Image (cartoon, rainbow, N blue to C red; front, side, top):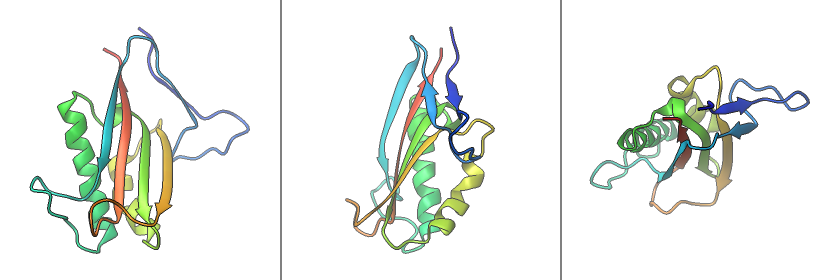
Length: 133
């Protein structure tokens, strides 16, 4: 079976943080992880008003969700990251960058929003992963 391809085509910005195109071959299993905030198993917000701490916990929640589906960060083809307007993006990305480093980075969509569904949440992360079995 073919492998998943992450492309950074000529003529588009070359970033070490993201690719532009993902090609998932027929027969791959696609995994969708819904929005994850910085909450513990009881639904309590973790990290207070520290966006770096909330970012790490949100990404760890994504890791747990992927593991339940038999996937890892290496299988992620697209990250969607929502930040509450006004948070320190460098602190947020700086906290999670070491967890996500890759020679073939996935696609990334980041956006600032007015608010999130979990009171006090500063970040929400969702992913799409694909596994060739």
